[in-house]
Image 1: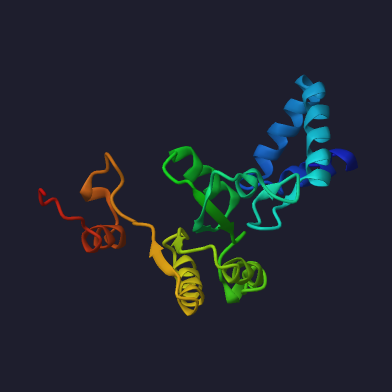
Image 2: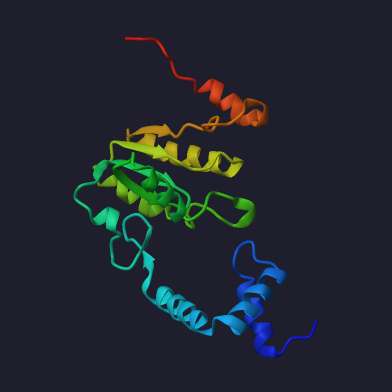
Length: 201
């Protein structure tokens, strides 16, 4: 279908978002142009300001508007605990659980040599600098359970162990409310291998 050059440009720009194909991009563009031009201006303004002002925390690589993100700047966080995650979205998910009070290191990805993602792209020099400060006593590896996530966890674990830092891995198992018959074999095997004792004290 023929679109005007500006409309084509808008559609292409919207398609850079994850999960947005040609149809969805068209629906979004048409909605903004037909019904919500004020919302479109607000969106454009927020995107421009966000791109200009939001960077990475100098300590953990989380999104931040200042040199340090609010977590690294907080004196109430436990500096001895460092949770390593793949993305800022993982930080938000853990924070929403309300159970973790340590600090984070955000990889912004995972090791994937075929995609050109190596230690440099994951900021591992900064990771090692953080460990060299001597504050961290335990590293919690919270990477995904994919092949790349496991390889990344193994690589990070080896770095941490060189500094005699305790390394733990988040548990991967059956979700609450999940039916065993619908759980994949890998998840089920992890759940059984990582089982907890129910012995009474």
